[in-house]
Image (cartoon, rainbow, N blue to C red; front, side, top):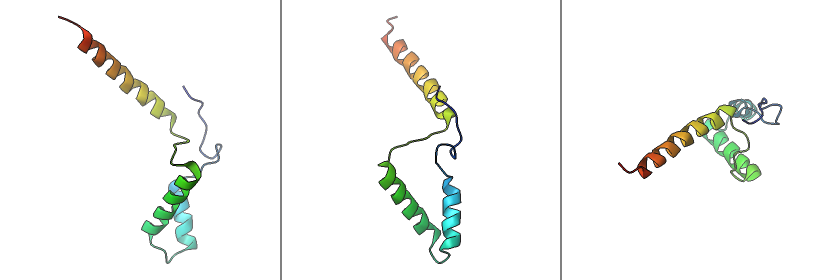
Length: 79
């Protein structure tokens, strides 16, 4: 399993906090526009790639893939 660390340790900040701070700094800008700009900036910087996910995402993916694998092998069985 991947190494666990806080988003702050990885150089990330919470989306909700970014929107909140920008809303305080630019009170006349609608929230939807702040979200649109933050999303565009994130995509420009990351290329739309996921760089960090909760470690539980990997655990869940393993569970789903294991179930899929078992289903596929059941389809191959001949009765």
